[in-house]
Image (cartoon, rainbow, N blue to C red; front, top):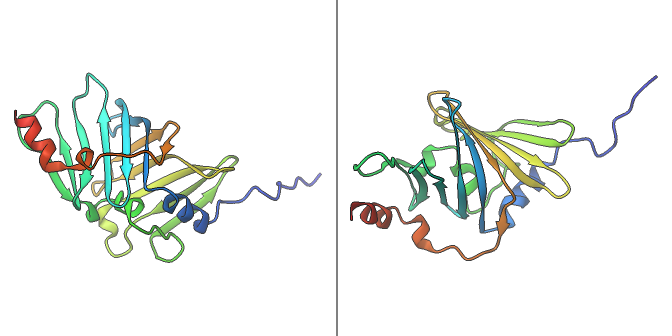
Length: 187
């Protein structure tokens, strides 16, 4: 007996995934993060495209990760030091925070697969693959980002599983202001 897969059982096209990202400028929602050491953190994520994201972690975690002004800042809640900072363009998150995301027009996609309910896209900066990669997992009908896995330049993986995102809300620029956050933590 020959089994035929339903006609819709194919990967979400890259053009549709690009459209999804380009369809919103702000989003917020809850997340669960699986860290490279297998520990689990939870919190809220705020996205303001282009170029800005903020991960607020629930207690007892007191860390904060934010991107703004072309930089990513990692605030360690156990430290009195300022944040560790990196250029956003040297991280895989840059690929989904760009002003115009276009997965079909660049050599950034290194994997595009489909299983029963999800489409997975693996992307990296084609000019700088040493910066790591991001594996994006989407559900379909409608297209929604459900999780991503960032593999950093050391090969360590961090998985972020998203709750339902809310789109279109006003998010203050201050949420993404690394200098203001640094100053408020010094008080």
